[in-house]
Image (cartoon, rainbow, N blue to C red):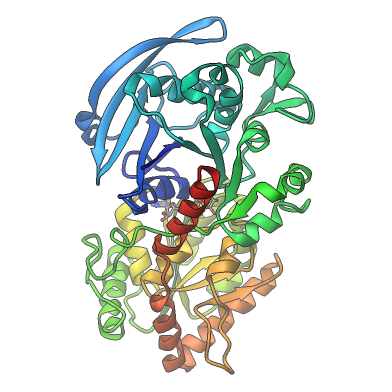
Amino acid sequence: MKKILFVASEGVPFIKTGGLADVVGSLPKCFDKEAYDVRVILPKYMCMKEEWKNKMKYLTHFYMDLAWRSQYVGILEMEYEGIPFYFIDNEYYFAGPKPYGNIYQDIEKFAFFSKAALSALPVIGFQPDIVHCHDWQTGLIPVFLKDKFHEGEFFRDMKSIITIHNLKFQGIWDMKTVKDITGLPSYYFTPDKLEAYGDANFLKGGIVYADAITTVSNTYAEEIKTPFYGERLDGLMRARSNSLRGIVNGIDYEEYNPETDPLIEKNYNARNFRKEKIKNKRALQKELGLEQDDRKFLIGIVSRLTDQKGFDLIAYMMDELCQQDVQLVVLGTGEERYENMFRHFAWKYQGKVSANIFYSEAMSHKIYASCDAFLMPSLFEPCGLSQLMSLRYGTVPIVRETGGLKDTVQPYNEYESTGTGFSFANYNAHEMLNTVKYAMHVYYNKKREWNKLIDRGMAMDFSWNTSARKYEELYQWLCP
Ligand code: ADP
Ligand code: GLC
């Protein structure tokens, strides 16, 4: 039995800000139970729902040295869908209304978390063969494993993997402070280790010291070796390319299943969507005050409202887009200028545009189920899960060909009648609009073709089946 430990800053159902949580919450239960004992460590944030906090059981606590300070580390435990989850408790670090706040606080918070997660292992009696880290918040774990922890028997043979979900976020802060809060010696703060461009960089530490590096799609694994997508670490990615591989994300096929989803108006499947899916659209149009019209081409967006997702293209084209025979429903939070942009257009085009500037699991499911198309013109996209959810719900994705979007959405070819969505190559607002217009044309004028696009999309398999096996191969390769 191989023992694997996931360490991450978020995971469903306990806490979520984006796709990372979906992956950390859904992947562990997809490994072969006979061969893998997979457990997960997360922070215990005060902003977690009471429902979850009440179910966690206090295990024990201890005090841990973090540089010159001694800090409380509480450990709570809860089994969820067969997977043991542990939660690191410290009310000083994990207070606040959201998991992430100011970067200078987050730097110390996740230095603490990373060290606490390792320190907790002997206490709970779990000695993983591999520690599987996710994103910059856990980037110090591979470093710690090679440092002090290496001296003890318990940690000596432990391997580490770091999965990059988003290279944009690296956990960068000045070296002096990072030395001070981590207690790591100066030895680590050179350009071949934690230092990057004069600062300390948590993710870089993880990439340098991990035994293997993965990212969440093949195309992104290639892209990050280039300056455009490399976020100033493309040189390092090229240097580590032998240890880097792309494994595309899956989604939880139980949770995202139009046939059983309790959050949507009317359940449907690949056989009856032609008749039943429309009932979801009707209900959503009514709920959101959109013009009630079965025929209208309804485009959905569910997203963090940031530059990454291509919202400047959308902002630029909104007026022109709204001249078309379309409806647009947006669900998201993020940068104020995009929140206000959508509020503005919802006011300007009442009955046509609906701006839902908040976070809601239920509303997201309704949108995936109700819309005809899903728009995701990302500037970059390590994988993207929203387009996978759309495909699962028979909602045709319109995407830019980057990262995981390129790997998971096959562009429609009208001559061969193939493809599962619509896509464009360049980060250009007019290309995006033309692609939307093309999709609209197929929707309005070639309904049978449109439905066949949905048939093919719903027939795709983006469950974890294939990708979980790829992680298993990697684990096997690291620990034969
Ligand atoms: P990223 O991780 O970059 O934000 P992904 O496409 O990988 O993008 O994952 C986004 C996840 O967050 C999806 O599960 C999506 O449904 C969800 N999501 C994003 N914004 C919201 C929101 N406002 N309300 C509910 N769910 C949201
Ligand atoms: C990040 C990426 C997104 C990816 C998710 C899960 O948030 O932005 O593309 O799907 O992580 O891996």
